[in-house]
Structure formats: structure tokens, C-alpha cells
Length: 350
Image (tube, helix red, strand yellow):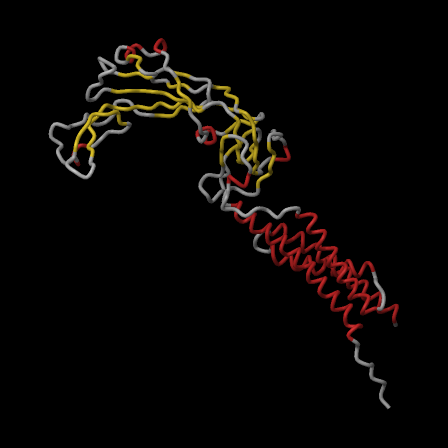
């Protein structure tokens, strides 16, 4: 007579392995969500130069930051002041901006016939497209151009800002020209009027072709910079696909406002990973207890790290191979421990 058939398992007996499988899957799912969020965040941040270390106002040059993108908040300090050599004008601010205008004819249209007026304009106005160009010819090219002059060295929290970052600083405050500093050839042509320099014989009544030059400065201020650390310098990230590789804003600006197109990194990733592992361990423990009629702590943990490591390896593969390798190493440890404990338990039951 053949061996007796085992009676079918009751619903109560199936409940524990089913619960174990569900908890194991939930643990794997929680871990996968954390890794997927990190992958999406890292992929978007690569467009701007890579993941950013948020140093805040405490950020200073450090060997551990080399090659990383950082967010730093601090006050600007001008070491080498900007100079407008042509006019010999200087300021102790990070940037000096020269604005040049010419008194020219402009064509105005308000639904009726074109009208013409003389006004200060910051670029040459082409009169060849005027409806009535006769009697409204403008001089043409400016003899002096508008320009920005950046400070040679600007520091922030002991970091030196690269020229591109200095040029991107924003803000403005008027700068009064110093007549005593004007070169002799320009001093003969310009006079001081309304916080600027004009070539008008009668400054209050400019004539066609007269020039007006004014200056403003980007003020020293508290700024937030996102850039790459190179020694004691903050520089643009050369591998950024957004074409900039850095960002600068006035004030203390959180990282989320710099890159609103990028997803936020997962909150508390370490704690959530631990929670995922604990759920997986609990689920694996119920499965092991059901199969072997006992809980083997080593086998339980081995199964949990094996499953989570394998899934996360697949997620990271092709996105960050070093992360994929780390998860694969964890999965490999799980495989070895699982094989060892299964063999040992079989020998015990033999």
C-alpha cells in the first residue's frame, strides 16, 4: 500500500505563509520606490551637473567636496574691484555695468499715421524702415558701447567664484561717475548731468546724436550659489547638459527653487530602506517558519537582503553602475548565506 497522503492544508495553516509573502513583497516594493525616486532625482540633476551637496551657510572649501556640486549661501566679498578702463570708473562692488544711449529719432504708431520723436535709445535705430525716413535720419553706429566689467576676484565663504558665476550675479544700484577720473579726451566731451555723463552742449536740451552714459553696480549681497567645487573655487560643471552647469540667486534660496523641473529626492532614504528591509525580514521569517517549522535568523535575513538586493540591482543597472554593483554585492551575500543555511537545515532534518 502506498504512503499515506498528507491532508490538505487548512486556511489557517496557509494564512501565515501568505502573510509572509505579502510582507516580503511590500518590503521589496517600499525599497524599490525609494531607489526609483533616487534614480529619477539623480537623472534630472545630471542635467544641471549632478547631485548637489547642500552645505548652506556653513559651506567652506573642504577636500571631501572636491568634484561635487554644492549649494552654498554666503556674503560676497570683492577682492579685485571691477574697472571701466575706457572711462576710468571703478567700484568696490562685484560688477560695474556701463549703459550707453544715443538721442535718436523713433517712429511711433498708435493706430493712425506714424509720428516721430527724439528720445534716448540704448541701440542704433535703423530709419530705413520708417514710413517717412526723410528728415529722420539717425547717426548710426554708437561710438561707445554698453558693457559689463566684472571684479577680478570675488569670494564667498572662502570660495573664489569663477568668472561665469560673477558675471551671472544679479541686482543693481546706481553708481555716480567721478569726473576727476575721466581721461582728458573724454573729459573734454562729456559733462555731468542727472547722475550720468552727456555730450550735450545744453544737457537739459539734448540734440540728435548726443550720447548719454550711466553706470550701475551689482551690489555686494547675500547670495546662494549652486556650482562645482574645484579646489577653493566654485566653477560651472562642464558635463551639465543644461548648458550652464551652475545657478546663482540673491538671498538664501532653497535648492527646490533653483531647479523646479527636478523631482525632490526621497525623504529619509536611509530610514525608509531600513523599514523596507525589516518588512522583508518579517515576511521571510514567516515563510521560513512555515517551511521549516522554525525561524532561522540567518536564513531569514539572507532571503530578505537577497530579494531586495536583486530587485534594486536591476533598478540601478544602466543608471548608476556603482550603485548597481553595491546592491549586487548585497544580493550575492544573501545568495551565499541562503545556500549555506538551506543546506545546513536539510542536513539537520536528514
